[in-house]
Image (cartoon, rainbow, N blue to C red):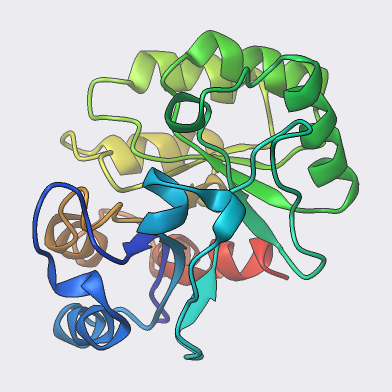
Length: 225
């Protein structure tokens, strides 16, 4: 089973020292937890300035996830990007404003998926309604968010979810059984959130082996083509 973390941060964290400050530390964490690869966003881009993107180590186990910001003061997705992250709260833009929707339509037209934290489920609903072709992966949803998640996933087929904080009893199984395992992706959110918990959960899911393989890495590979 190939395990790929769709939601990982590399670089210094504002909350303190972490092993994944640099690539060797991050890869050591992968070895410790039996994670084969990860889609990584650099903490500089996430918490500081995506306009001056930090260098990412050249390693085949790391797939860079650029942070994109809409509008004339923002950034565009690189030509080779398959997955990006949008952070409206951190970088102070309107997700469904004119610039936000224009960027979302460009991403959808180019077949680029987007990672989003659902701080405002209503805005996610509007975004998915206005740009139905945009593939959205909701990350760090929180274990109390199943009702809001169901509201969104019931009506938007292109919305997926990661497992980073989907840690309620049988929550992953419930989502996979209701919407299909192809809409659930293994993610940790580490080091902002715990990585060992979601990795342990992955090995103990009460799902078929085929569904677990999709969640572990198959769905991420499909997003990355």
